[in-house]
Image 1 (cartoon, one colour):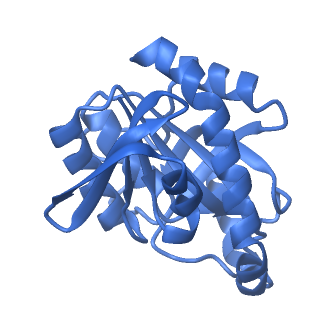
Image 2 (image 1 turned 180 degrees about the horizontal axis):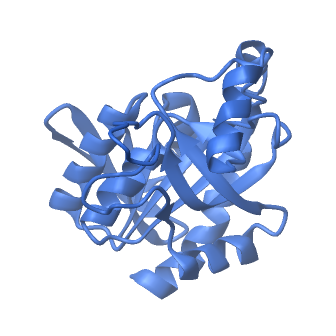
Length: 227
């Protein structure tokens, strides 16, 4: 089984609409829907916005459903480096607002003791094969919708990120702690600069549609490798 963790209903509805043999199970605050897409067994949760919800949903999914691979997917900001509707395959993810100072590098995470959370190399090869117009990059996660050129610039300077969101770093952190392979597919909905809010509203549905199509294409390849 492959797990899909998505923040918003608008991001997940295309995948949910083609899910066959669906069954919804509620665990604590989260609904998990199992079924098949292109014959591939999946479990999908729409976790809500932010790192806490994403981490909680990931931990529950791993505990209850034991997926062989987790995909964090949805839309992201482009940090003035990626164009709207670009598809980004995360080579790694970072948590840009984690900073305990005390002589430690910004973003350095406890237990794993590193800044970058690497995504799964084999799965990334399949993603790039199935989605040839995608490109690899670092995705930076934090509990903030970035709509500032200055903040976007600082995230790029610190982490060399190509995109930003509010969930996939947390998903990757929990997956890594639990030794579950993890990847992230993100479609750019806005620049994460001063025009981010209006761009997000204008391009959310189109970006989500592109994202769903990308996930649908790659699932059969991932199933052969992981399930």
